[in-house]
Image (cartoon, rainbow, N blue to C red; front, side):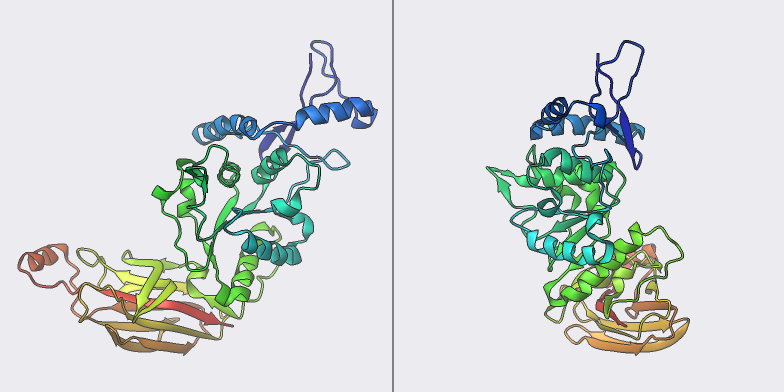
Length: 400
């Protein structure tokens, strides 16, 4: 009769290797150094030679049970250090071969300089030659604190046979994300270039919550800024010492990456096309049937950490009413810093000093906008316009 020991890592219980036999009712433990070397090697080989379908069979039921009952998944791990401890990296870089491997290398190089070699895991460098890779991947993905999911232009479309890889039964990219979500890790999508965030309906059910996670964009036109932003975000998540001052801002920071302190219901953070140009990180003020608020407002906390703010403000190219005019206001700590007017095909550039600003507020509106739903209905029935706004702050940018 064999017994098992369990190790606890960040709330997850990982069954350890089976110990030597013990009499019924007596759980005898022996140090690893006392076990015969040849027998131990045999146990290790038997324990680490599972196939991918075995890993999936072990992990899938426990992930579902954890979500239903709140209990920790019972997983297994494959590698120990020389002292018998499980070596865990805080940051796991998830990527798909043939889509985002180059970006994953850039992320690893940048994060290693920030956090150290042992704190960053990427499969190509985190698994030594001769190591069974399947249990090592399960171990690292299950116990990481932060997972960066690199999503490139072919992330959803690469196929395995006739099936999309993301939906294939043994897709490691999806499995790693499932394990990180089950382990309550901070899962951050990293969008490469100008691609859009995958919608919930495009993702397998087990990782659909990924679509609701705040992403960070890694763009070749601003690679240094993007890598700095990612490094700052990751460092803040894995650093527990509250006495550490926040890192200095990158030279160029997208305003949307700060996270809105407040905003009205009709404001969204998405891409925009203004005057024939595509802007991937924009603030869009667009209403459907009536305006929840006559003026679209969004605010950000700057903390006097930036020198200037610059954006292109204008009417969306796909506006249903192209003749409209938009009014854009920039407010710093309650003081009007700038007010500009733009029309369809004629945007304006706003550039203001924000070096003393703690809280920045952006306000946009279209003169004559109808707020009351009953009045909006009457106007619609009579064939008149509600003057609904279709405006955007295109790629709002902060400079240190």
